Image (cartoon, rainbow, N blue to C red; front, side):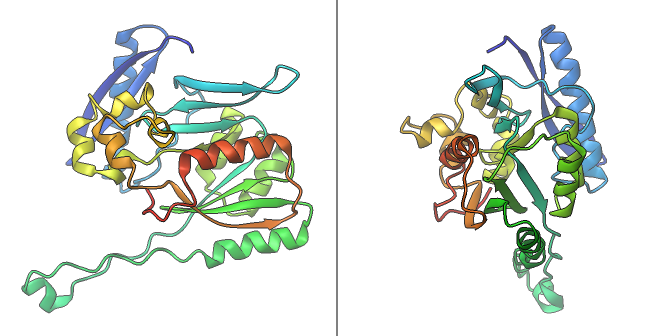
Length: 287
């Protein structure tokens, strides 16, 4: 693992407060500048109502510490685990395709006139229906029976893991497939620019405990760089507030295997790593 400098910064824009982490190979000061810039941009996006778009969609390479990597028999990199600016473990693959599909946010429920007068809380919005997005996937598989996918539900949408073959993440044909399956356009851009597929493996801290995230981010949430939550899953007792709280959540829920039953060995390895971290079989709320 290469040595990285890390810094945490906070920014407030139009009442929106955001924390961000900056990493740099150069110096601590450079990491501080990167963190301040990331926090400011995050706050600006929040002020514009663009929540949840935490991908680094610029053209520069991601500055993320690497926890682990694995290679093919010929020595070429197959995949790696890194830590993003929120302290989440991210799976990066050179050729095993992940498709990230965001579902429309359901409208916020109202408590009604009398509910508002008597202090009743509005009902929680129902999860966005996944059927239209899944219909696209099923239509694609029907037209291309040689393709196979593992299908997962996430907190904000769907995640597909292609198990049948390997794909070039920057190829125009691959990008067209991602678009046909309804993948987030910003995720498609990320695949092209970074020349890899990505999938978050550990819960978002603000979904686990929003208040604790704001209070402890500088001390505890950053510690996930050294102690990803998966260590607790593997049997090591959780230590930070984030690790403890994250045990009550899963990142995604397995729905089905669809299409071709053939599984490429590299995809099989990736699926095992993915499922070990995300706990898709656990009956837990998604984060």
